[in-house]
Image 1 (cartoon, one colour):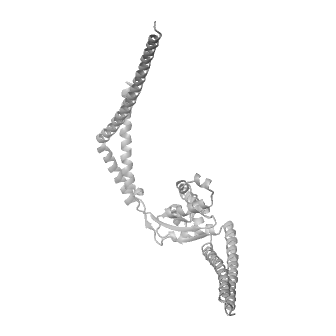
Image 2: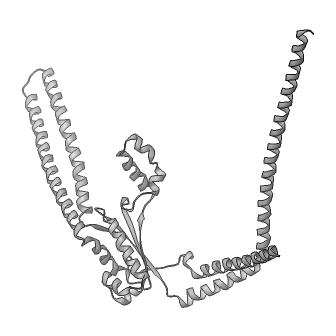
Length: 354
């Protein structure tokens, strides 16, 4: 037998086996794709089926749910406008210093807990008002005042103190979401009460509860004394720099009047001008520091500054989400929906049991 013919026959067998393997691979891939497409179609059909089932259920029982919403809204409106006492609200904006915002929030939380526990005697004692006035207070809260510009400035100051690797770990969204309350400059204290004339009576007790704190009093005294010392040092340094500037001017005038050559006079005036410019730059830097010190002396004179006080007369609370007519209609609608849904589920379970 010719060896070439044997080699050709073996090559033909190998080619056939390879063709069979490739065809089987394509069949497996085709089956996998077909199964995946069928699974997606099944999921889409199932989701569509449940959506249609829910819409049919909703359509069949819409009248009952609307009737329940109407009854709930009517009862809520009767309570809101006929039985419930009118509620009034007012806000005060404060600027805590020396980290006293933490104490502010603790005090507000303490007052709110007394309200929730109906401990109006202790609340009246803490705020320096009568028990009847304390009973009129229904809510008190403190929230930080923030806008995007303030958050951006805070993030800029925060990043400037970090190295490059640390900055990569904290982005702007994370920083704005996880800012502590003491990082905010201003805070808003909001009070809701039945007595619309009580709000201005509450301002001093709330502020004094922090201003009269021994720890913050010591911190304020030390910081204020340091600012005064810095102010005196800056003023003395600025006076000395001013005297030095005047001295340079006198030297320049004296040298220019000697009648020396124009080149010597020019060189002398140039050197003195450079020194005078340096002194002037230092003077302006100290002047900016003095301005900052004066601002701090004004803002940090007390522990808590009142930026805007409570209104003399509170504004009537008219938030739609606190209106019992809205709450009643929404509650009635949801309650009827759940009731009908549970009844239908119970019937399906009993049918499945049989």
